Amino acid sequence: MTTADTSPGHLAFWARPDDERAAVFAALRRHDGLPWIPFRDPTPFSGGVGGFHAVVRHADVVTASRNAGMFANSPNAASLYDIPPWLTRYLDSMIQKDGPEHARMRKVVVRAFSPRMLARLEADIRARAFRIVDDVLAQRSGEFVTGVAQRLPVAVICSMLGLDDSHHDLVARHGNTLVGSTDPEYTGVRRSYLLHHGAPGVRHVVSLSARLAFAGEALHRLVRRTGRDRLREPRDDLVSTLVHADVDGERLTPHEVATLFILLVLAGSETTRATITHALRLLTAHPEQREHLLADVEGRIGAAVEEVVRHASPVLQFRRTATADGELGGTRVRAGDKLLLFYTSANRDEAVFDDPDRFDITRAPTIRAVGEPDRLLSNFVNGIKRQRYTL
Image 1 (tube, rainbow, N blue to C red):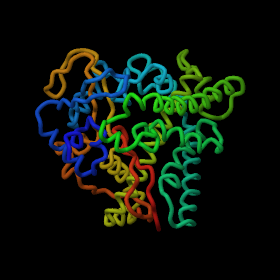
Image 2: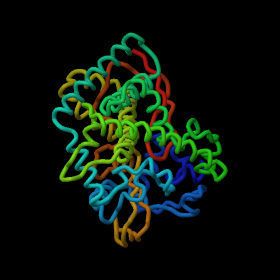
Image 3: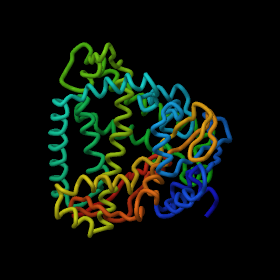
Image 4: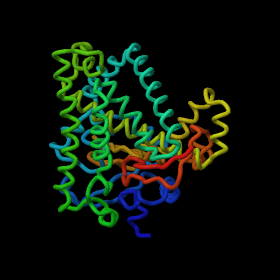
């Protein structure tokens, strides 16, 4: 095993088995202060050698998350590497915003989710979930991610925004490209190259950037066009509500609605499908937990969902950027420093969770995973691209 294989700053680390990665984070939590992880960015976006503070303890992750004035989302909350403005156009959602700008967008979005819309959304989710379960029962085996875990959130998000079922494949395909920007299946870069070098090299950047821009533009254009249509002819959907909402004189532009849609596709769809798939994986590996859940689904499902999210950490990390000199976890932090908040480590912090590597609350349908999952190669999300299942 090379040094790169054991450093969270190198892509090779994220190809290691779960237990090996957990052991590295456990060792990092035992160090005083915030570990400094050096990395070399071979792309032209960030300019060479650098590094980041690894925020690996639960208490420090909570502190940084609650201090938005010191630890900012801007310029890139969802990328270790600084990305160019022409690509930021597609990812410039409220997750990248701070202060009044974030508050303005959040206020409009929150008001749009009225009790009436939430009730309609719940009914839609329930109906689609029943159809998916019926299909699983009829097929009895198949590929779980595309057939179940991805199918539900993509359909719900599209329906919520007023996009018909014909758009599902396009949304899923381009969403996979944006989320899987470090996976060979979506980058077109050889896996051996990525694992050795840690990221696409300069000669791959033009091709990779074109793929990302094409995917981002396709999703952005779809909802931007829908937003303009709804300005002229409102319908009973979220896009219409958002572009016509007037909350204290504020509303979202079609561009802002489009970036919100991309955020929903990336943060909503990917995390939901990963959680559902990790639930299948964990409950197949722990049949006693599955039986415990099935004995009282209504009473235990809430805790089971929380445990799946804690144990799997569908989002591995988010970035913050220090806005001023300060301190976190006993470490001096300077303005401009990058910090990665490792949720996958905080969720296994021994100071907060007893026996943190143990999965101890159940959640599952009666189906079981077959074989090993085909994991997404990523240092951002703990994604699964394919997982076979059987009844």
